[in-house]
Length: 146
View (cartoon, rainbow, N blue to C red):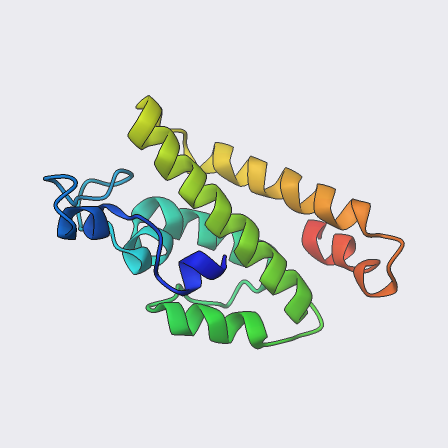
C-alpha cells in the first residue's frame, strides 16, 4: 500500500514516460490513461468495486475523486465503519485491483467486478477471522457482513 500511496507503482502511464511501452491506456477499461488515481479510483472497474464496498460500509458515500480523498475517508470513523475496517477494506480493494490489472496485462483474462468483489469479501472475512482473539477486531465481522 505504501508504494501505491507514494505513487511508485509501475502503471502504464509511468512505464510510457520511461519509454518502456508505447500505449498508456488503462488495461481494465481502455478509455483513459492508466495512472494511480485512474486505476484505483476513476476506472469503471474500480468504481464498481468501491460501490460494492460502500454498500457494506457506508451506503451514502460517493466515489472518491482523488487519492487524498480516499486517505481522508480511511481516517474517518463511524459506528458502522470504524477506521480499522475502512483501512482494511481499502488495502484489500487496492491489492485486488492491482492483481486484476496484472491478470489482464499478463494473462489477457478480465474477470467481472462481481467475481473480484467475492475475492475481496473472502479475503476480508479471512483477515478478520484470524484476528478475532484481539478485542478491537471482534466486532468487525458483524460490521462487514451486515
